[in-house]
Image 1 (tube, rainbow, N blue to C red):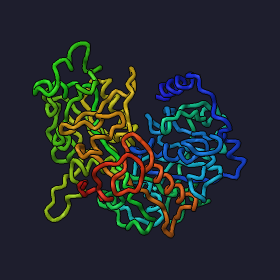
Image 2: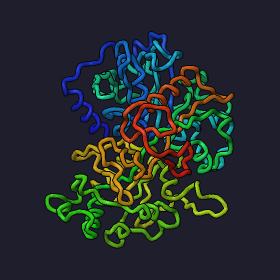
Image 3: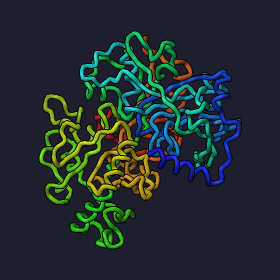
Image 4: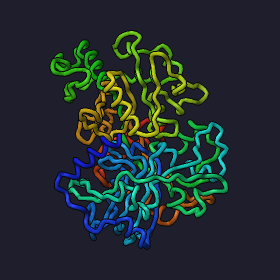
Amino acid sequence: MKTQLRQIALAVATLGMTPAALALTPAQIAAGPTTYVWVAGSSAAQNTVFRGVISLCNGLAGNAGTNDLHIYMEGYAIEPGLYISDRTAYACTMSAAAGAALAGKKTVVYHTVQGGSFNAYTPHLSMAGEPNPNGYLPGTLGRVNDLAGQGAVGKCAAGAAGTISVTLNGVAYNIGRYGDCDAVTKTYTTTLKGDASGLPGQSYPDGGFSDTEYLINKQNLGITKNLSVIGSEVATSIGQAFGVAVSYPLYYQLQKNDIATGDIAASCTATPFTTSSPNLTPACQPNLPAQRYTTIAGKDSIVGVDGSLFGGSAGSVVSLVRHIPTSGTQSVSDARFLAQPCATGTRGGALESAGTADSTSTVTVNQQSGTSGVEIALRNASLADQFALGVVSMENVPVPTATNDRWAFVKLDGVSPNADAQQRAKAMDGTYTFWYELAAFTADGATSPASLAGAALVTAVTAKLANSDLRGIFVTPAAAASGPTSKGARLGNSCQLAVQ
């Protein structure tokens, strides 16, 4: 896998880009003074948050000053959130857009999406003594290792730095990048705040971003402590669309189903298109009824499911590629398809989510810790000529090659999630309903509070997201912001239907 990713990185590096000027290298970071911030949480919004952070740097996104941004990546993705790299870091001199606590300061922002949205909160719950009755608090969290040591042999590709190009608001910037960086794991208990130093931004996260608000995760995971014990949360009014992504063989089969009902043309599956190389033009995008996803995603309804649910042969095997329970993408999937935990009142109606233990001889439940893992599992299913499906946020766009990104989004109940290049138009006009609102968390509880710089960064990134043109992201009418605006809003409640 690393060989493939390095090939991608080398291909990008050969496009004639010049290194970013005065990038913050490990030596410059070590020389100090350096401010440290750590944000954690949503893997679905990894690329979105990355872009929000770097839009605060000098010399980028219209900010004054010199671009000295350098990014540090555990893997070799083209940029954070595109393919795989669950632990990254961004080092730059912050602009005035970051607020008074950060402006003009040489800053390292650690960014962790390992384990998904709820890991923005879990270290603080562990330090606050959460009983963790269902075992969902890992007690640890990783980040990219201390950057001051990353230039040494064996860390960050033996100190080799390259460049990537990132486009912000229509302008392309060359950015210095270290790949294949080491990671470090921190441990959290009532007596240990990550490590002996117990420093916000280095030993534990200052906060982060979640696909759904704390109360949804508290109910789903059986957490006992209220949010106020560990911090506070802002309903950002920033909408994020999600879609059902499927392997190529399943995409081709769904196309055959739609041809049979006259919904798409017969030419959509004609030669040269095959199960390993389907027709991906918008006119040939097939449909998946939501109730079929519900059937395979539910613990009780998954029994007896096989490929015939999607029009395949009886007895054929299907793979449900889901996220782990602490994932925000999993919580939105459960809310959309299983009414969990939204319909858990007296009348009931919520369905329990199928996990790996519910796999059968004809259904494999494949559990991944982040969005990149889901994408890889779908790719592997395509290469193995298998039906597979899972939920992926609309900030992601597959870029198919012979071996990578061999998956595609389908329509849900007849509506395409990606009818436009920014993959949000149908969600914004109210036609496509599979979208939820990001929550921004800041640790301000007594046990493990964020630093002033950390709190400022979460606030500044939230503002950037609400005023930027980002794929799959939009603001609702409840936000006083200049970004693309939807007709509907959930008003910070994931269980509430959007109102106009």
